[in-house]
Image 1 (cartoon, rainbow, N blue to C red):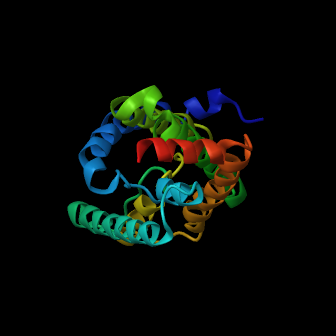
Image 2 (tube, rainbow, N blue to C red):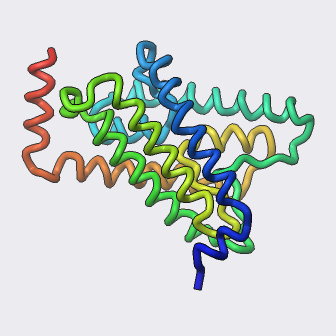
Length: 220
């Protein structure tokens, strides 16, 4: 039986806490800084989710993901140059396959990506929430959501360094280091979560599409 005590003993709790706090503080700043330019599309997971939520067009989605992936690759090469080696790993992108199966990693990644998407829509991306949270609180809450996901998954299993949450980040890390056979998880998990969330977003409740249209008409 896997217990939290066994995961605490690995020493992963403190790094996970620091990573979560950093994400909670830094992400809102990037959202505020890039919001006027691209709507703060920094993460393919969120961009894919907005497409299936019918909040972004396919050409715009492809353009954003292309630049996000390119930016991740450049960051990975900068890490390689900074460390002067290809032997480095980024938390959330690499797992110990002797302790964690790809099936388990996919399940954790999918579940956490879905939680990230669901909560991000609920506090920041859904146009119907503008009057509730406004343009200032939404990014802060999204940062808290990412920080919590990073913290909780960072010590969830021995050999698992946390969820990716951003496939472009892991793609860049592997460009600078080495590609793992399970890199598909970082893309397929958020894609699957986005598809399911998109279905729920429009079919539960059944009148949500009309409500979205009403909000669009009021804000236009």
